Image (tube, rainbow, N blue to C red; front, side, top):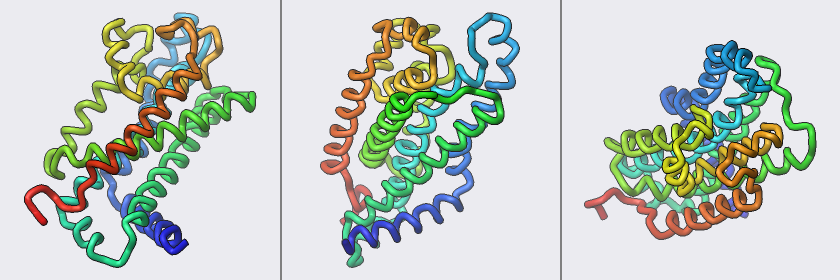
Length: 265
């Protein structure tokens, strides 16, 4: 119970520190919201002309939600933990009476709160800013919650594990470069049916593609399932793959996490 109480205190501290990092707030929290607004305005006439059957905001919403999940979890964790390791914050925390689990609970709390807030803002902007109809059935909301929770957890533990690959000085390039590529080939910024088949196969190896597919199954009409690789939403496989990434990421996090930067004791 003491560790949980300390974890809640650590969550409040993490949120306060996160809110003061303007660059992190913009590129992880606000960026998907800004892109949804821009894409909805810029491509609105094109979607009306080609008879897609839904607005630009409706079309891009699943991708922006999926991107937001990875940005607030994976990117935030990879960059913040690498920075804390290099500037000695983790070393100092390790020497205090605070149990290690409280530190990780604080990180999980930070990601959980920021991710839920971001999702809420995205849905509010889509609904009241651009008239997107949100899911009308309980099963779709449950699927949204399941894909969202698994994606956030997998992104968090994978981000913590990934932070060990580089120093704070270069972690930005190591994280942002691959993330940007994955967003393009996973159907975030362009239509999934516009991605070449071999790139679809590459994207299928990573969780972002499955998060995006799960979100499309929540917000798109069932007729749009035909553009998927299996011509169906593959809901069961989506949840299974994300669960596997969550378990695998947790194992990687436990086995690779370092309190001290390389070359120090």
